[in-house]
Each structure stands twice: as C-alpha cells, then as structure tokens.
Image (cartoon, rainbow, N blue to C red; front, side, top):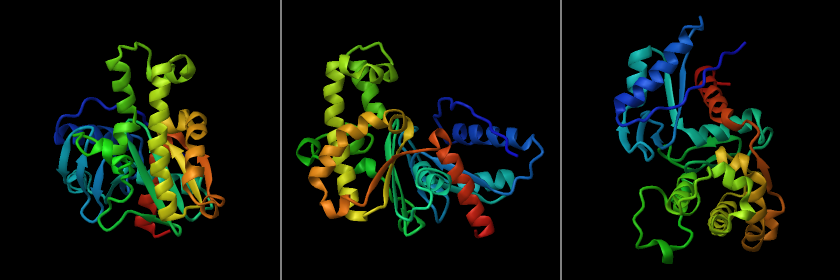
Length: 277
C-alpha cells in the first residue's frame, strides 16, 4: 500500500521558503495515518552527507542550509539529505534500469546536468557527499576559461536551462518539448544541440575511462524524453574517444523510473540507513 503526493515547487527565495514547502508536503503525507519512521530528501545541489547540510543549490542560490537539523527538530524522526541525482542512481539500481548491476553511472539531464555513481554495488558519494557533479566538468577550456557562469561549465553547453535561454534569446515561442518534437525543422537549435551533445559525449567518455561502469543510464526530463535523439548523437563520439576494450562491455540505457527515480532512491536510502538492508 502506498500514497503519493505530487506538487509543483513554487518560487524559492530563502531557506524558510525551502523548509516551508518540504514541511507542507510532509505534513500532508502524515495526514494519511502513516507512521513516519524517517525522511529522505533529494536536493538539486551539493550536500555534505556527514552533517546533512546543503552546501549549495544553484537554482535557488541557497548556501549552507542545515536542512537535516531543521527537519529533524520539526518532525522528530531521522532525516537523510542527499543529492537528487545520487538518489536517482540508487533508485534505478534498486528497481529500475540498473537492477542487478554493480557499477552504475547515471547521468541526469534536466534543468541542470548531474551524475550519480554506484561502485561495486555501493552508493558512492565521495569524501563529503559531493561526488558526481559532472555538470562542472570542463570539455573545452579554450572556450570556457574566460567565461563566468553561475552553473557548471558542462551545463553551459548542455542543460535545460541553457536550451531555454537559447530559445528565449532567439524569440522562439515554441516550448522546448515542441522544438524537440520537430528538431529537424529548427535548424539553429538542431545545430546548437549537436554541439551540446558533443560536449556531453566527451564528459561521458571521460567518466567511462575513469570509472569503467557496467551501464550508463540517462535520466532527467531531457535524458528520459529525448533519449533516442541524444544517444544517436553521442554514440559516434564516445566510440571515437573510448578504447574498444572499455566500451564493449558498457551498456547505455534509458531510465525506467522516470520522475519517480529520486523518490524510489530516497525510500531505498532511508530503509538502508534505518534497517541496514
């Protein structure tokens, strides 16, 4: 038996806004006669898993938020705060495209660009919980060294935010989904998307050589919905840059859990922490 609540996030300008929206959702869940044992929170930013502090959320421009402490005080249960893409990787390994595999690279392509890592069957988050920030990888220093950008340098090339800005600057009134549906007829955007996929392919190629995963899972709103288009553009570049003996054992898969990937990862994470499964 399960209960789901889906709610769009309103504009968040402060720590109070963030906490209020999370608290409101949790309060609604508690109204359904469930005993709350623990809370798992996935945030679109860097987290210190040792303290449960959110170090930085670029989309909201929030820094050093003691989210674990605030929510534990408010709800009186253990709280586990983790990067949303990291939880997405855990969810796909538990119930999705990476089930049964021990080394997973999940690349989430949505408003931003991030990665989650499973190494030898264990969630890998680095020394302080900040591993997987693939959006900050450099794929062309000659073009990037003098550019100031609020997000990561790879995200400057490939991210929903960047694509939306492209449409806005050229006064293209179609939504991003509509443009993707008729990609060939939008010549300027298609060329821009080609370049974006080149940079994404180089970032993934570097990660493959470093990590030697069993599978690369593409997730996120763009990664999930435009999987075939992205794969067609990145595969030739990855094949040129990654040694055959590494690449021949790597699968590329579309995420199976879609928007529930982070939620399932959070559930799995809380269960593992509370019940040591």
